[in-house]
Length: 269
Image 1: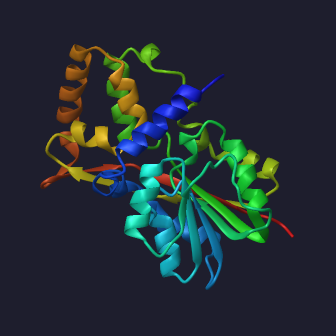
Image 2: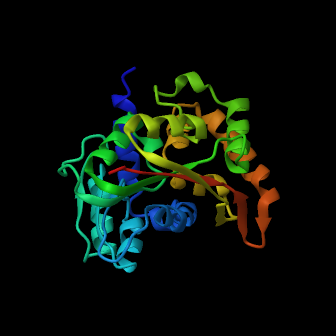
Image 3: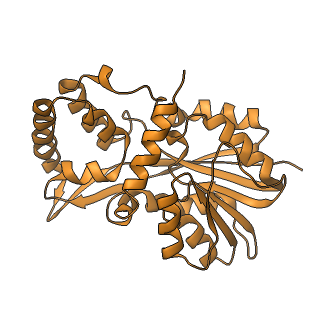
């Protein structure tokens, strides 16, 4: 199936959110970074590629650990945000499915909550393998499926009651990569050894006032679905989301479980 429209919508959506990422999406995604970096063993001087870098948090954290990092993202606006945040690190516009680096360039490749946004994750995994040196490590993080995530179970439960999902543009399944066994097979197909999965108990901490509006800034996929709905349907969903997520209020914040997992493997000698 052709997902080119979805890919462009994703690129535009993240470009539009580059200036607010730190106030929205980063409230959950940065919690996966310690486990992600632990999985790729960024030793002093290691060359690390941050694929789908967004505003550069993974590359920045790796640099703080004395690795030599580089980042790439398909959004030029995200790349500019990364350059402003971490001016000492090289960032460039690039494609996870078609890396420009030579074979055996990096000691580590890491991708934080990114691969479910692209159209061909298998190709991205194979590209990571190609640019890794022998004994190099690749890791990526992924949100858990609704069956394991209070945030997604609740939000999609509300959507299923009110939204006409057939109006959304064609897109890959957002939770294919939440299937641990399937991802293990993908790593094996790419040539990796020593496949490991680590669960990360992320908690999304969001302002309690108007959780719906906050979440429309948090990601791109759900807003894309909602943008196709009639105004009356959007209004009903907004009201139910804001009412429902009050159960997770802790003082002036919403604290809702949004766990992730980190997958990793090693390129053999």
